[in-house]
Each structure stands twice: as structure tokens, then as C-alpha cells.
Length: 246
Image 1 (cartoon, rainbow, N blue to C red):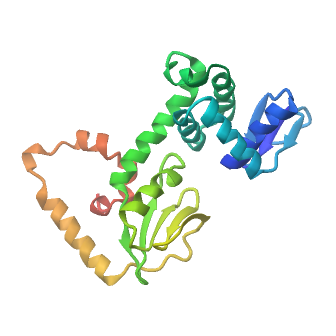
Image 2: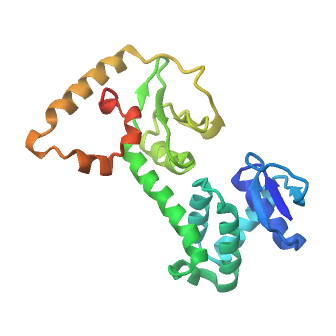
């Protein structure tokens, strides 16, 4: 049996709930965005159920640990192919042995989850320093990102706390999703590029000043492009104000 879900975290957890309570022999869990039906596989479409999803989250918290739940979420949002079954196997093992699983770094079932989770964690850490807001006409601050992984839900709370008195949008243009904040509420929504206002005139002036500052602040005999690329991978430069012309 193959479970087909809608690609969301809640629907995936709903599939995990069905796995335990329906006691079916599940060979794979696949997103409907990727699955190609055929005449051989027996498959079942899973409908998202928030109550079932939350019950699985609570079970992970109580039977394993909060650290494991965070790692599972990061693994899921890595979007690496095959992660669904890695997560299911981890949950099965965790329900058997409890929080000890967090220290079993030599176990393949654990590493299959931890390696993607750490990649996501590292990219989140980088993005906190590399994200650049731009002031748009209308007074909204806008930041465009194109991360390797789906990290927007992990980094948004940081900016909600840091810029609590500002209206802002963080836009993952690769996945066409955005985090929107209006000083009161924050939400995730689908968003394309068609309705983005022009940059505010003040923003253009500040960008010119920032580029000039960045250009002249460097100590020439200490410039190390290789080290810079380790901390600021070149794939992110197109969205960095100070590097757009490089």
C-alpha cells in the first residue's frame, strides 16, 4: 500500500496516524505533487485531519522528545526525496526506545533523519544573517529568498520578534510561498511575483549608500574570497543588496 498525501506536514502526520490505527502494510508515503499513478501499485489518498496530526505530534513529544519532533519537522521540510519513510521509520523506533534515540548517532534510521535536519538547521542559521529587507512603495518591507530547503516557517518567528513594529513580507520565490506580518499577526500564504510594488525612492538611495560602504570598508590585504564563499555561498548572492552587482 502506498499512501498519497498533499505534501503538507499536517497531512503527512495524518498518514502516520492511519499507518498506526489502520494497521496497513505501507510500502511508501508519497506527495501527490510527485506521485505518478500506475496499474501495479495499490494506493490510498490521505485527507488532512488536524486532530489526527496533532495527536501524532503529541505522541512524539511524550514518547520521544521535543528535540526529535523538531528534527523530524526539519527533515520533512528539507524536501529531500524519500524523507517520508525515513521519518516513519524514525518514529517507529522512537516509540519503542524513547528519548534514547536522540543519542543513537550510529544508527542509519536516526542518521537518515538527522543529516537532512542539520542541513536545514544550517541553512536557517545562514539565512538569519543573509536575508535582506527592501522598503517598498506603501511602507512594507520585502525580502526575497531562494533557499535550498523549505525553511520559511523556521526563520519567520525570528524576524517577527526582531521587527515586531514593522509590516514585512518574506517571500520564497522558488516555492511561491510567503510569510506575511502586519505587527499583529503572522501567516503563511501562497504568493507570486506579479503584485510586488516598486522599491521606495528612499530604499534606492540607502542601497547605493550600503553598497558604497560595503565596497570601502574591506581591508584589501585581508580579502579572502574563498572564506567569504564558505560563509556566504554564491548561490545566495543574487538576493544580497551588497552583492547584486557581482
